[in-house]
Image (cartoon, rainbow, N blue to C red; front, top):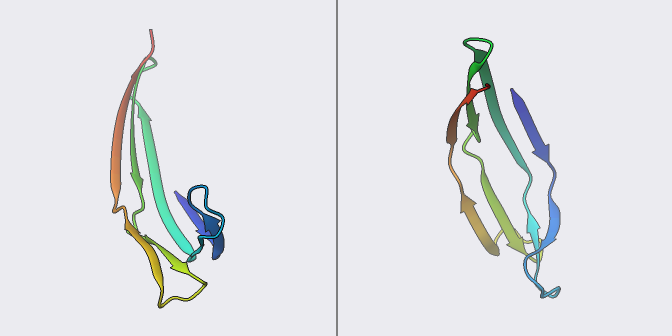
Amino acid sequence: MALKHHSPFTVIYGWDASQLTRLESETTLGASVSYAVTKNFSVRLQANNLTNQVARFYWNNDPDQIARYEKYGRSYLMDVTFKY
């Protein structure tokens, strides 16, 4: 289980330093579980952004001036490992 949080901070997208934006604070939750079926075969399941957190960017540090609004949604992954 993993919980990541960051407070708001200023970012620049691209090469134009005059277009500063503020990324709002985010908290995301993820989980991973793995199981070794045999010595040579294992399975892992992962889930990311379980809280369905969105990314909000503002111009001029003003929440009423939305620069970007990105919604990634949850993602689920499964991988299988075979060692020989």
